[in-house]
Image (cartoon, rainbow, N blue to C red):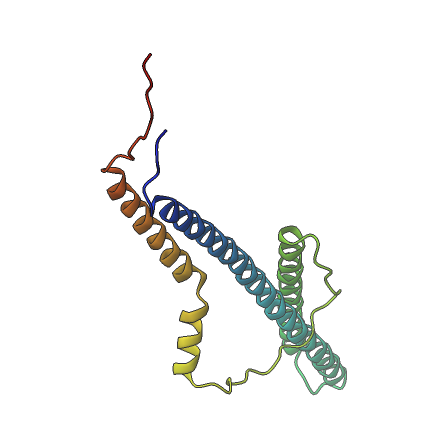
Length: 184
C-alpha cells in the first residue's frame, strides 16, 4: 500500500481553498462591475431627465416671449421679422426638448433592459448636490485597496499557484509503498 508523505494533502487543501477564494473574489468583482454599470446608466438617466426639465422650462419661457412679441407686433411696436425669429427659436427649443425627452426615455429603457427586476420610478429624483466625503483621500485610497476584489483574486490566485508549485516539488519524491509478502 502506498503511504502518502506528509504535507501533500495540506498543499492540496491549500490550493483548493485559494482557488475557491479567487473564484469568490472574481464573482464579487463581477457584481461590482454590474453595480458600476447600473450607476453609469442611472446617472445617464438623471442627467437626461434634468436636461429635459431645463428644455421644457426653456420652451415655456420662449412661448411667453413669443406671446409678448406677437402682442407688440399687433401694437406695431415690433417688426414681423421679430415674430418670425421668436417662432423659429421656439421651434428649435421644442425640437431640443423632444430630443432630450428621447434621451431620457432611452436611458430609462437601458436600465429596464439591463436590470429587468429593478422597479423604476416614472421619473428620477432631482440630482443630488455633491458632497466631499468625511474621510481623507489617503484613507479612501487605502480602503479601496483593502476592499479590491481584483487584488484579492490576484492574491488568492498567486497563493494557489504557489501551493501547486510546492505540490509539484513534493511530487518529485515518490510516495513509499509498504507491503508484506508471504511465501509458502
